[in-house]
Image (cartoon, rainbow, N blue to C red; front, top):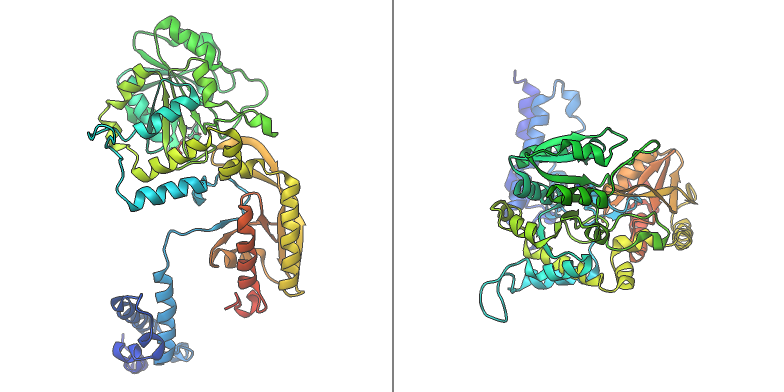
Length: 483
Ligand SMILES: *Cc1c(COP(=O)(O)O)cnc(C)c1O
């Protein structure tokens, strides 16, 4: 029921036009559309109106400042927020290299350049410069992929989940696919092999047990309804202990014997031998091709270090079949992806260059003493810039690859640790998430940890500046965050 004090307060609310006259709004830059300013002022008034209407006692409204300058300031703050992109770069100080929520692999500089070029201009996406006739968008990367993996043919689709789905639908719809029970993976909740299989129209036939599968298990399951033998790389977990899995090569042997194609979903899909760089051996795409696997699928934005994409390589006979599936169109990649992928793949023509220039590979292989130096330098600078109430140190927690890759590998890493007396570390981390650019950190035992392994060297300076701006002189206690 409307009380008298509510009516009185509502009448005190300034009009939209009155607030718009406030200097900070009247002189707002031309880059802000006037309609946005007006709309935001109306929003602010409407919020105040509802606060006033809900008030149960006049006392509650005593602190409510509804003067035109106050409402104009509030509107300006909101307008600034609205002018920012929703999707924007962040500094990943989590130590997780392939963080699906933070966009997985970073593109190499060459890939970024390629995207810029093709995005801002027309391109020969599906046009042959030689003949002047229509061509296929996939040609730009097919030869490269074949060269790098040893495969006869290749196709690129939207992502690896799409690649698995398309391959299953093309090769086994209405028929059976034999998979080991130990390989029925779920990746990040949205990709579960049994579900992908069901939606592709193929029927799953599980063989073996969770920890052990033998070639004989596959053999027994083969019937005239079988269309495909499938092997899935358990890329985000490992079954340890009493285990047995059938090697790709043996599965290929059985496939040949029964006249069935063999497909392998590698998940991450590396092209370089990581064991040369002190990491555990991860099966390479080339290994599967050499073993004779007919169709291999893997992601573009995991350890390959390129754009989101699903890569399918293998025998021409099967690839032709997959390419001619109508669903390929629904899963097709756009020109920006192709540009980034081609540039990334080209870097692999020289392995040294790939390791140097592909951010994921570089971060994966950077020696921990380099990280330690970077962390120490950063800590020294921070001690200079932040007040003595801050505890700043260097810690040595492990970091992870993430993104469903190399599940057992924990990389020795180095972090700058931050602590502010009397302030909850979670609060500090939240402050960092809201800074510009946002910094995503870990919180561990009441300390904020900034891991350097997932940051590019050239980002250290930006991190320092952001920390100083966010926590400088005022500190978070005094509603700080610099300016
Ligand atoms: C990551 C992964 C997928 C899904 O790949 P996306 O590119 O994320 O769609 C499928 N299978 C395996 C084994 C994976 O590791």
